[in-house]
Image 1 (spheres, one colour):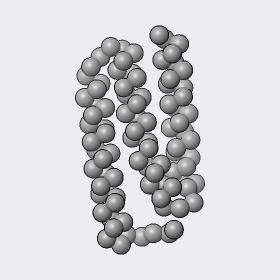
Image 2 (tube, rainbow, N blue to C red):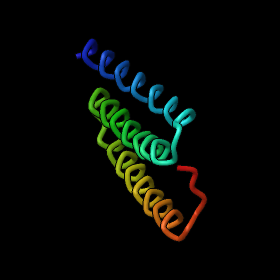
Image 3 (cartoon, rainbow, N blue to C red):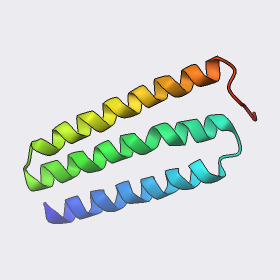
Image 4 (cartoon, helix red, strand yellow):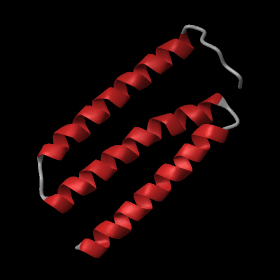
Length: 89
């Protein structure tokens, strides 16, 4: 179980690093938006794996809060762009 968890954490951390690089160098705004939306999803996955590994259900609540906050941020960002926010496509 510990080996599988370590490999899972390594893969999720690699995904997080690659997503962060895409956020920094993404040539267009949609690339950056997708990366910005993917980072909280990866964080929710990391928290979920951590909760399973440590057999603690309280981390699931933290995971739900992160998911809800990221969803609200996505809605706010979409409304900002819809109302004519800056674009550099």
